[in-house]
Amino acid sequence: MAERTKYILDEADLPAQWYNVVPDLPEPPPPPLHPGTREPVGPADLAPLFPQALIEQEVTAERYIDIPEEVRDVYRLWRPSPLYRAHRLEKALGTPARIYYKYEGVSPVGSHKPNTAVPQAFYNAAEGVTRLTTETGAGQWGSALAFACATFGLSCEVWQVRASYDQKPYRKLMMETFGAQVYPSPSDRTAAGRAILAENPQSTGSLGIAISEAVEQAAADPGARYALGSVLNHVLLHQTVIGEEALRQFELAGDTPDVLVGCTGGGSNFGGLAFPFLREKLAGRMNPVIRAVEPAACPTLTRGRYAYDFGDTAGLTPLLKMHTLGHDFIPDPIHAGGLRYHGMSPLISHIYELGLIEALAIGQQECFAAGVQFARTEGIIPAPEPTHALAACIQEALRCKETGEEKVILTALCGHAHLDLPAYGAYLAGDMVDNELPDAALEKSLAALP
Image 1 (cartoon, rainbow, N blue to C red):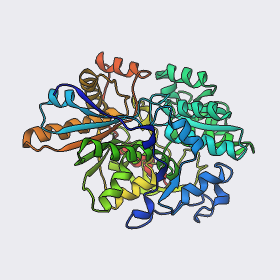
Image 2 (tube, rainbow, N blue to C red):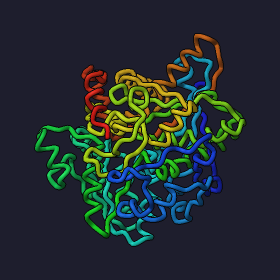
Image 3 (cartoon, rainbow, N blue to C red):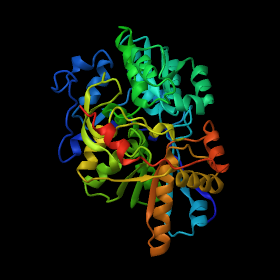
């Protein structure tokens, strides 16, 4: 069959709850620590940055959290999102494997990010917050928060990593269209940004630096709060609508995944798809291999150290136990801007340490080759980030071709590349190079761990 099968859920199938994986784990993850006292942080420590509802979700021991109807009403603009069977890609590869992808590019901003931006804006507005600050790499998260703030009447300020700010001008225009103010990071608007520029006026920036700037701005304004697009527990919680829908869609397909693959930067897209399937695996109802894929230029899981580290460059955030390359690490300006973060979600890091998931790092040339092949067979140009997962899917499918195994492969296609086409232009022109992380650079950044 040389076509694409689409599995669609009705609005009635929109999840009514988010899933919290923590109660189902063999042991709980280590707590975040206060940067000054090195003691576990409490709700009062987080209050200057987050509304109470999100703080409660960050530390909850409840397995399921009800999704407010106001949030579900906005979700209905694009959710439930479709699950596709990639028949044309399978045929091109000549594989007996069955490949499925959960497509999040149908959202208003073309990615999975509104799944958490909408509830974050809702909870902040409900508690009287008038302004949100944030960082963004590729611009997907900044676009999502700008959209969510416009929906709930909040002002939005975005610090975009300089490399992506220059590479992706249309992301900036999308954010501004939704009403956000966008600044390149490092900027001269914050003490953290000015310090970086004084040391290196040509800095291409990092998500860690941009976080420092956004946190600094939020902490100085009683009417403002900070919003994070990945890494933290409550963010991954909101993204589980992806996996919950996919489980129902696999019931429609009459199939069960053997291998689940997702790209990982901070972890929200990967956790959103994987956690509901991990629940089923831990309960003995299925047994998929769960594989996280990251860029070779920013390999937090595969080469980072599992240690307490700051979530930002300036050291303003709590200390998080996570796989990290060091908060001073400045990744090369690869095109997958959303994967250029020095750390990995503490929850995903913990699950990796428990041996419940695998990790793989791939260079960007192989990833873009996979993206081009996917576009030419399935008709969707994937964002640079999910090309990492697609490359790993193709690797698995070709192994199946060699062995004759009829494995079922599932991945999260977390966004399209309509505003990332210059990255494909660089690949197609032969100007793209793989940026391997030298051992010396890694050891230097790890030496600065607190």
